[in-house]
Length: 186
Image (cartoon, rainbow, N blue to C red; front, side, top):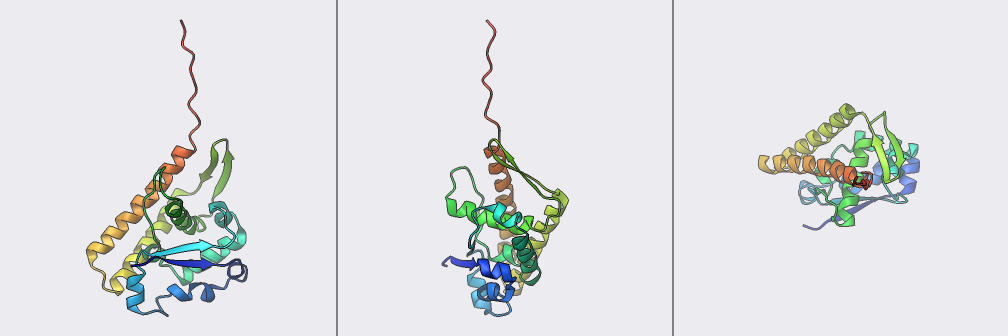
């Protein structure tokens, strides 16, 4: 299977053009074979976005991606995701950061603060968990509809959970203050 890149343009976001944005991955408009072949193989790229903060902190992007989820709730089925580590390729980190952004746009109490090491993200953990669970449930429903075996569905669910956990683990490691050198008494 070949990865497919789905570009969401700045003009689609500004106009909240959901139909134009999702046409290539809309289960209502593509065949079951195309859905099956796209399982875990789609990379979203967002024109003009240089990072997560461009998505989660921008009111137009938040509005667009919240509406996108209402119309197209299958991100966890389609998106190319892997757990990441400090040495992961930039593409995999970006894939996961976009997926995390799709969850975080639904979190109301979200604070992004700059730290000496990078940035700190504060959010309502219960709201985050509910949104993630919804994405995982929707992925399982679509997988079932196209006759993916239950083992594939549970493996995908576990992969998503490991990927999300790895995102926070790497973020935590990157935002740790440098160790202080202690002077020893003689």
